[in-house]
Image 1 (cartoon, rainbow, N blue to C red):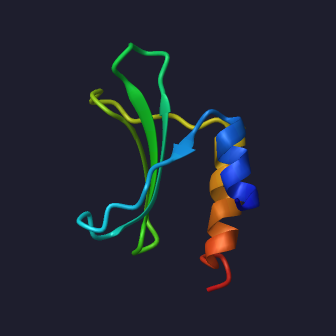
Image 2: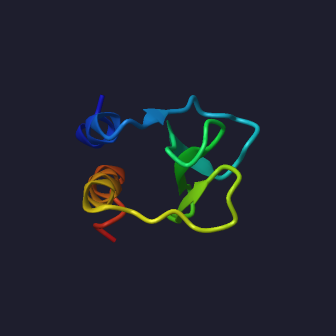
Amino acid sequence: MSEADKMFEELGYRLLPRDINNKGILLHYIRDSNLSANESEHIVFYSDKEIKCHYTYCTFNKTLNMQELQAIHKKCEELGWLDE
């Protein structure tokens, strides 16, 4: 498990298994939200170096806290995205 994965785990996120049918998604982290019982928070890394953060059913965007930003930054370092 990478350092970034440990950071996400400490924040309550789990890494979903890679879905080979969903091309473009590199990594997908998810955790239960406190908004409602059926709501989840998602942080998705795409192979084109985009990152999207959202809730499952809400129409508004997910806000990030500093710990989530640090974990995202660490994952970007591990992926080599910051070297380019």
